[in-house]
Image (cartoon, rainbow, N blue to C red; front, side):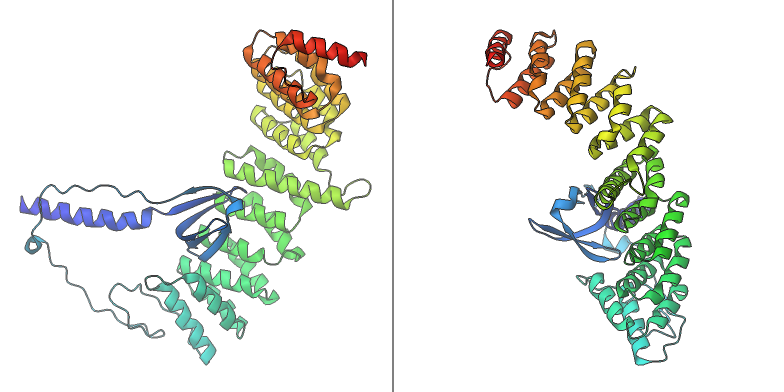
Length: 435
C-alpha cells in the first residue's frame, strides 16, 4: 500500500510540473498567425505576450481570438502521503561551465558557450545569453534580447559566430531575433544559412529576422523560394507575412496555390496577402498591371476542384474587380449551390448595373433557398432602384426567409418601411414610377 501511494504521489508531482509547460495563452491574429506564451499585461488597446522570443506587444485590433490558459485540472488525492514515506532523491553536484561562470541553484539549466570571450563586450554578450537560459521569476526575455542587440552592435562578427556555436533552440531563436533587430546587412547571409535549421522555432525566428530587410532582393528571392518547400505551417505563415510586407508581387502565384491548403490559418494568411498585393499593383499601375492578380485567379479557377473554387471565388469577392464579371456570370449556372451563392456575393460586391441584370435573371430561376438569399443580398448591396421590381416579386416567394430578405433589401434601397407587404410595395412602386 505504501509503495503504491509513493508511486502515485510522484506521478502527480510530475503531472503538475508538466501542466505548467503544457498550458499556454494562445492569441489568434486576424492575419491567420497564432502566437503562444503568457499574457503578462492586457489593456483595451494592447496585449503584452511573453513568448520564447521575448515579450511582444500586440494591438487589440489585430487580434481575432484570445484563449487563456486558465484551466487547472482538479487533482484528488486518494490518501494523504506522509512526508517520511516519500523517497529521498540524491542530487549530484553541478560542475560549472569552463566558459560561463554561474552561481545559480540546482534548478538552473545547464548552458555553456564553446567560444572563448576575448573582449569585455564578448564577455557581456556571453553573460546575457547565459541569463536568457536561466531567467529569474518575473524577468522578461525581451529586455535581455534588446540588451544583446545593443551590445552586439559593437561586435556583430561575434554574434554571427555564435549562430553556429549555440545549439539550444530557444536561445538560438532569441539570438536570431537580436541579429534581425540590428538591421546590419552583414547578418543577412548567415541568417539565410539558418533557414535550413532543423527546429521550427529557429526557422520562424530566422524568417521574422529576415523580414527586417524588406527591400533586399536576395532576401525576398530566398524567402519566396523557401515557401513551397517549407513543411511547417507556422514557418509558412511567417514566410507569407514576410513576403506580403516585402510587397513581393512575384509571390502571388505561390499564394494562389496555397489556397488549397488544409490549414485554415494558411488560407487566411494568403488571402490577406493576395488582397494587399492586388491593391498595391492597382495603385501603382497606370496601364496594364505588371502582375495581373485577377487574371491569375481566374486561370486557376478554371482548373480548380470544388473546394479550391470556393476559396478563389471568396477572394475574388474581396477584390471587387469588374474584370472578373464575365467569368463570374459563367458560374451563375453552376450545378453546385454553394458555388452559385459565392458567385452571387462576388457579383454584388461589384455594384455594377450589368452584374445586377444577371443577378435578377438568375434570381427568378434559382431554386436553392440559401443561394436565392445571397442573390437578394447582392441586389441590396447594389442600392440600384432598377432591381426594385424583382425584389417586390420575391415578396411572394414560398420561403419566408426569402420574403424577409427581399423586404429588408427593399427598405435598404428605398428607405421606405413597408415590411414584407407585397400589395403596399407594389402600390408605392407604381406611384413612384408614374412620377
